[in-house]
Each structure stands twice: as structure tokens, then as C-alpha cells.
Image 1 (cartoon, helix red, strand yellow):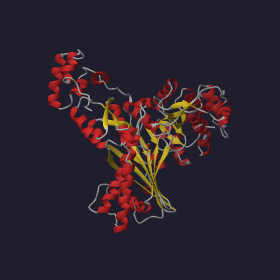
Image 2 (tube, rainbow, N blue to C red):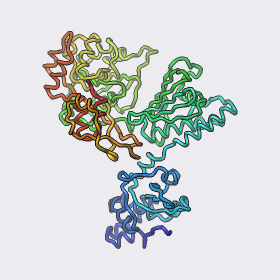
Image 3 (cartoon, rainbow, N blue to C red):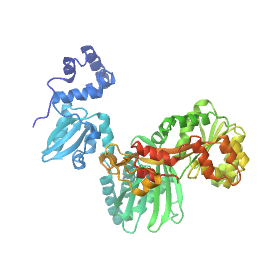
Image 4 (cartoon, rainbow, N blue to C red):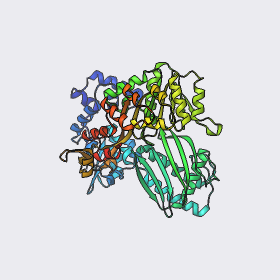
Amino acid sequence: MAQPRLKMRLGDLLVQERIISDDQLQLALQQQRHTGRKLGTTLIDLGFISEVQLLTFLARQLDVPFFDLNNLTIDASAVMLLPEVQARRYRALAVNLSDDKVTVVMSAPADLSALDAIAALLSPRELVLAVAREGQLLEYFDRLYRRTREIENFAVQLHEEHQETGFELGASSLNAGADEGEATVAKLLRSLFEDAVQVGASDIHIEPDEKVLRIRQRIDGVLHENILSEVCIAQALVLRLKLVAGLDISEKRLPQDGRFAMKVRGRDVDVRMSTMPAQYGESVVIRLLDTMESLWSIEQIGLEPEDRQKLDDVMARSHGMFLTTGPTGCGKSTTLYAMLMEMRRQNVNILTIEDPVEFHITDVQQMQVNRAAEFTFASALRNFLRHDPDIIMVGEIRDRETASIAVESALTGHLVLSTLHTNTAATTVTRLLDLGVEPYLLRASLLAVMAQRLVRLTCNHCKEPEDVPSHILKTFKIDAGEAFFKGRGCTHCDGLGIKYRKAVYELMVVSEQIQDLIVPGAEADKIQQIAIAEGMRPLTQAGIDMARRGEISLQEAWRVRSE
């Protein structure tokens, strides 16, 4: 069956239908000759027509459907019929397979050469054409074309080479070396990194077991597992990673950590690596830090208007201490980085001491803890005071010495930002007192505390009513008839029902009433009560409110509750 074709050239057709003028067409054609880009793209770039207008027009002229991919159930078996290279080249995605027909959506359905090439690739199956926006297609390419099969193939190849040759690793990068075994292990690791960046994973776990090798990726806080039977390749992977990170390859009995930088899919990614001796070999956890993706602005944190005003008031202060609290991986550092990015506009001297420096911020002097050289949080703080700072960020308050110096710095005309591991804003006060900070000093220095968690957002494409366990309803004091929603699982969320994460928080500003409660033997419950009475929304209540708005499930709010 012949593919749908326009009756005349696109430009002439648009002019004939009075969608654009002849002058606009001539200008677009003139620019097209210089850029070499498609006419439709040129018209959109010039602002003569929108992408949706153009695609709607093309769909009508070709008598084909215009799909919104977000509302379409995509057949994974159909996707694989069109190789990724060709899919990206022609901006085409196979979405449905039925009998001897394949439905393919394109962003440039008037491209005859692309149509012919795709039809040849899918032959003898018949191509059924549809239209979709280019931005959606690019998003779905990253989502659907995973490298799982490629990783498995490289693992099998590496396993065979290892058995045949027993190669030793000696290269210092992830680029393919001269040795065949080295080339394969480099290709496997690069595929792992590319797949992780493609799906937005924050961590990669390489965990050898007795008979299998587990490779897990943490995506939106959830670990996704891929099991390889070639367990013997684990050593080769660990050795290559150690070489790249500059670690001791002969030391397998003690934990090690290192870091390196690499470019993945056109992005500069900072890689932190930790090794740990386990029963069946060394376990590796790799943290991927993508600056462009991970650095947030204050607006992205999602503060309520009144809380945003409170935080602005803190950032405008010349001295005092602001703390973010919560468990590991709850976004504390992200919040502080967002504040630093906002405050650097004030023509101030900002110094940070971190372990490690996760992201580089322009106009901020960032220092790395070096315990071997006795450059710790505490020693850095002491030296900072002689370096004329306006704002100081301390990666974490871990001990009495650091806490004491941070408080003293806040009292001597500096704004101090730091993190602490506590469950609620109120318990931060008691924790600092337990560390040995004098109550009168804490009263004079502490400005505000933000306790936070990261919650997993419900996928909007597969949202359905949630069946909430009775004990959760009882504990939260929620009526059984109240409706909540969860994600069922679909292609948009990899079957998990969740997509992306967001901070849920409570922000406690230290008022005069709260200051009066900062005494030896202070009670966190009383501080909490006063803070709530003065307008603080507790973290647990904030989670419930998000569930009521349909942003998260009620069980997700239960997971991150603070009491």
C-alpha cells in the first residue's frame, strides 16, 4: 500500500490554505538555504506557525491521526521493530503492532525519503502513519530504548573472553583499549553509564552474588534490578572502575572511595564511587551527579508562598544559622545549593566546606574536606573566619567541635548554612544541645530549621483510586470515604506508578517563644507545639495535603511521616 503523500510541496500548500503568506514562505526558503534544515522546522523557528498547528495541518492533509504520546498505550514489542539509530534519525517511533501492520508516529510525515526508508526497514509489514510532536518523540526515545539487551550481550562476550584468555586490565579510562578484553569491559561499562543517564538514575549498584551478578539502578528513589548470570565478570568491572577512579586495585579487603568525571550522552557527569568487600566479591555503588539536572533553584523546591517569604527573610539576614535536616538522600544539600545560587547575586563572599563537593557553583569558593591533611569541617571553619566570608556553608554538622564553631561563626556576623541528621525541625534543637552547644548561644544564633523528605510523585498517566489500609486512615484521622490516588503502572513510569520526586518539608522559624524553650533539658514536643501554633505545617501534614491534591499516594505520605 502506498504511503500518504502531500498533493503539492508543503510551502505551496500552506500558502494556498492561507496559513502563511507568500512573503513568509520566501523568507523561510531563503533561511532554509543557509541552514539546510527542513522547511517545517524553519517556519516554526521563525514564528510563522506553531509545531502543533503544522502537525495538525499535515495530519489533516495526509488523513492520518495526530497522537498525544502521553495518552497512548505503546506496545514495547512494536518499538523494537525500528532500531534506535533509525528512530532518532527519522524522528519516528513504532507504537503498535497488529497482524501485518505497524503504526509509526513521525514528527515530519511529509519527508518522503524518511517514509520510504522506514517502510523498507519494516517490510514486509505495512506501515501505518501517524503524527506526533518532536519533543515528545525525543522524550520517549530515551524512555523506551533501554540498553538492557546491549548490556547483556556485552556481559556474555566479556564472560567468554575472560574464560578463553584470562585477560588483565590495564587501561585508565572507559574508552576501548587495544586489548580485546579491555575493549569489551569498557563498552559494557559505558553502556551501563549511558543507560543510567538516559533513564535518570542517581546510583548504579554492582553486586556480585554466589551465582549471579546484580546490577541495580536507583530511579526516583526506587531500585531497578537487572540480573546477569555471568557473575565472573564482576571482578573485571570492579578493576576497571578502580583504575579510572585512581584506587588501589590490589586492596580488596578494605572499603575505598574515589571519583572521576566523564561525558555521557553529551553531558558532563561527575561520578562518585564506593567499594565495599562483600561475601562474593567487592560491591560497588556509583553515584552519578549531573550538574544540569541536579542543581535546583528556589522555585523548583516547591515552597508554599508563606514559606518562601520566610526563607527569603533568612537569606536576607547578615548573621545567624539556618539548618536543613532529615535522613541521608532527602535533598538537604540540594536545598542549600539552591539557597547559595540565590544568595550569590548579593555581591557577597561565600565559602563552603563539603565532603565531597558535589556541584560546582560559579562565584562560590568551595573546599573539599581532606582528613589526611587534617583539613576537617572544624579546622576549615576556624580558617574561614580569617578569609572575610559573608556566608558560610558547612556540608554537615557531625560533632561537638563543628557545632560549636558553626554557632560561634553565626554570632560573629556570618550567615551559616548547614545540615544535620534529625527527624523533625524541633528535634534539631535538642540534638544541638546534646552535642554540647550552650543554650544561650543557640538561642542567639539559630534562625530557622527545615526538615524535609523526598516523596515519589504519582504518575499522572495511570492514576487510579487508592485502596488505603485502615490503620493508615486511623492513624492520620482521615475519613474512610475520602478519595486518594495511586499509580497503576504504565509505559510512562516503567510500570512503577511513580514518576519523579519532590521535597515535602516543614519550616520552623525560631521565634521569641521558641527561644524561651531552648534551655537545658529542652523538650522537642513543646517546641513542636509552639511552632505549629505559630504557623508551621508539620511534615506529616504536608505529606497528607499532597496526597489530597493527588500528587502522591496516601501510602507514600505514610512512608515519609515524621512521627
